Amino acid sequence: MLANRFKMKNISKEDFILWDTINDEPLEHHDTVYHYTTVVEIINTDGFKLSEGQELRCVASLSKGWQTIISEAIEQTK
Image (cartoon, rainbow, N blue to C red; front, side):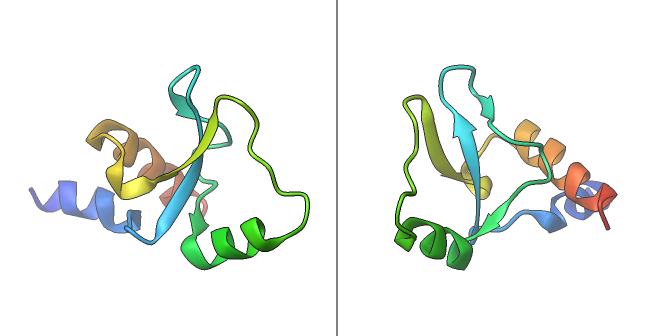
């Protein structure tokens, strides 16, 4: 149980990922996560547009499997 908590320490309700809805997977590398303040900045920038089959998803709302993969990828960049 303690090991599971350690793996999820990089997961937050404040973080988002670009998601490929066609392939049902992250659109970018697994360690590319955006804090909600960055998402707001990106959206407010002229020209920002998601393509068909792309969406922003909260990392904390992803399956535990994806959360683990993303958390471990983030941990490897530290």
